[in-house]
Image (tube, rainbow, N blue to C red; front, side, top):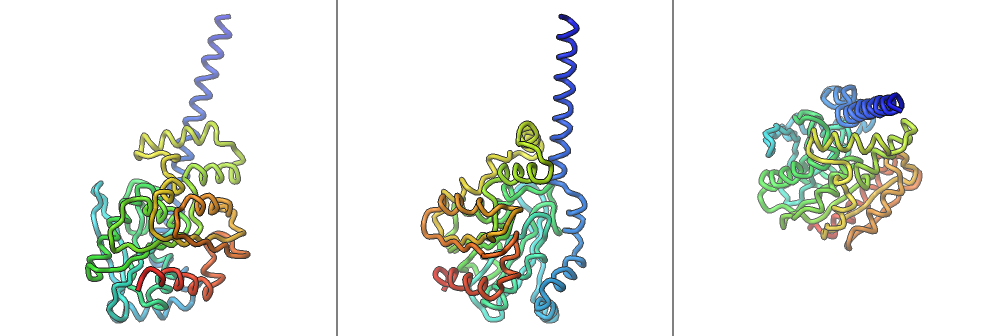
Amino acid sequence: MKKTIKYSILGLAALCTVVLCGGYYMLGHALKPEGLITRSRNIAESYNFMFEQYPELQPWVESLVTVGALKDFYIENDHGETLHALYVAAAHPTPKTAVIVHGYTDNAIRMFMIGYLYNRDLGYNILLPDLQHQGESEGPAIQMGWKDRWDVLQWMNIANEIFGDSTQMVVHGISMGGATTMMVSGEEQKPFVKCFVEDCGYTSVWDEFSHELKTSFHLPPFPLMYTTSWLCEKKYGWNFKEASSLKQVAKSQLPMLFIHGDKDTYVPTWMVYPLYEAKPEPKELWIVPGAAHAVSYQENKQEYTDRVRAFVGRYIH
C-alpha cells in the first residue's frame, strides 16, 4: 500500500513536471519565437520581401524617402518600453488618417501594402506602429494584441497630434493586427476615431492557440493550454481567455468592416461569424472567395481598395 502511494505521488509529480515544462516550451514557442522575431527585426529583409511581393511599393517608398516623407517616431509606453512607428503625411493636407496594425511576427514595413492603399490611393495620412517585441519596438514578448491595445491607443493619440490635432481616423489591422484592432475598439474612444477595419483577426488568444495546438501538435487544450495560459499570466500579466476580441467588439459602438478569406485555415474562417454577430451596428462583412490567410488584399487589390474606400468614406469626409 505504501509503495502504491509512493509511486502514485512520484508519477503525479513527474506528470506535473512534464506539463509544466511543456507549458514553458509552448509559452516561448508562442510569444518569443526567436527565428520569426529575427525576421521581424530585419528591416532590410522586410523591405526586400515587400518589394518582391508588391512591386508597386518600391517606387512609392523610394519617392517618400527622396522627399523625406517617410519618418520614424518613438514613444515610451506606461511600462517604460520604447516603441517605434513609421508615419507618412498625405501628399495634400488632410484630416483623414489611418493607423495600420501589423500581424504576428511582422512589423510596420510588412504592412506597407495597406499604407499604400490609404496614403497613395485614398490620400490619407498614415501611421504604422511596430507592436511589442517586433520590428524596432521593445517589449518582453509578443502580447497578441491584448497589452498592445493600450499602446495602439497611445499611437492613435500621437497620430492625431502629428497630423493636426483634428483628424478623422480609421484603425486597420490584419491577422494579429486585426485582433488588436478589435481589442482596441472595445475601449473608450476619442472623438476623432471614426471607424475600424479588421482583416482575419481571431476571436480570442485562447481560441487561436487551441486551434494551433490541435493543427500543429495534434493535442487537446487540456492540460497544456491551461498551464501555458497560467504561466503567461504569471510572467506577462494576462491570460489567454481574457485576451478576447469577441468580448471587446461586443462593447464597440463605432462602425467596423470585417474581412476574412473563406479558405483561411490559420485563423479559421468560422471565427469571423461570432465576431460579426457580437458587434453592434453599424458593421459590414466581406467574406473573400478563395482567399487564404492574410492575402485578401494581395489577391484582390482593386476590390479590396474599393470596399475599404466605400466603407471608410461613409464615416470619414
